Length: 387
Image (cartoon, rainbow, N blue to C red; front, side, top):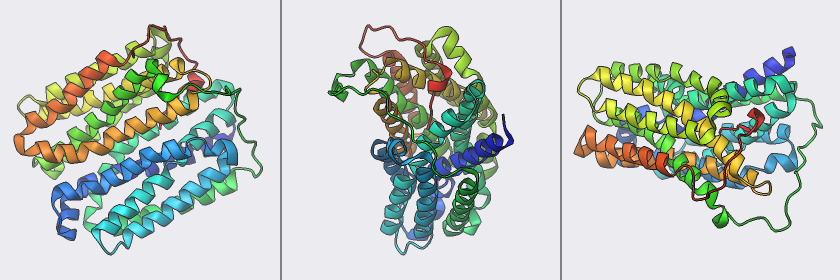
């Protein structure tokens, strides 16, 4: 692989962490935000959810924009626009303005992941594409614990300082990509699209995978938001975040498992492992909660590639791009509803807080196959995309 390709992949991985990390950066700061803006902790949790819902919706609106306007243009626009929105968050004069700015952040940030994934698939040599996509997938997943770790370390500086620092990071990344990517890059040509694409409501073979996608990040955020709400010490919270980072590397080898046993069994295994992880977290003692963090990350690292493979193999040719956008939409809807749900359940105890995602994960494992008897084919590694 050429040195230029290594640099490009490194910049895209860094961008993936910084972009997706915005969803999680306010989680360790919920109490501080509530105190600063004189709102309840439940209201403060919407600082993350506002970004998440807009980010999810952005995939429906912007998922195919780079096909029409080029990867380079969309990547640069998304980074610069996210930088600008981050500055607006930093200077927001009221809590409502803060939420509006966070929603704007999420909307413009959604242009980055689809363009980055497509760029990796198109620029790397065929033999290196699976590795490139796996590394980028790892960066998207690693954003969750990494963003929380860094935000907790610098929480005393305030959200405005963190946002200004992130804005500077987005601008520097945009400059690096501007210099690295040549102008006039070929735009991805759409394949043969049916004149009358099948409506979404008739894609019954995908319904199970979409519903399952809602539970994956819902479970992850529920555990970490719940640990924060229920009074774990800062050192314990940092331990949970660090413990959950190494198991995410499993996603680098998950594509091989998908090829051997199929995407649906891989997704089910990941969902069930995630549910078991949360059950472990119900046991008495912080050590069990730390073990739950490790197992949960491992489960997510299996479930996500399995769900991606399921969607990619079951979607019809005229619907595949939209099917992947909907998968990502549901994935981040789950992440976005987790903080307010955790705030609502926390007064009823740690057990009540974890049983909601446990039930969701087990239900998802049961329905992930969808309602079609159609037998899925295993997609090629180059089809595996994650956002």
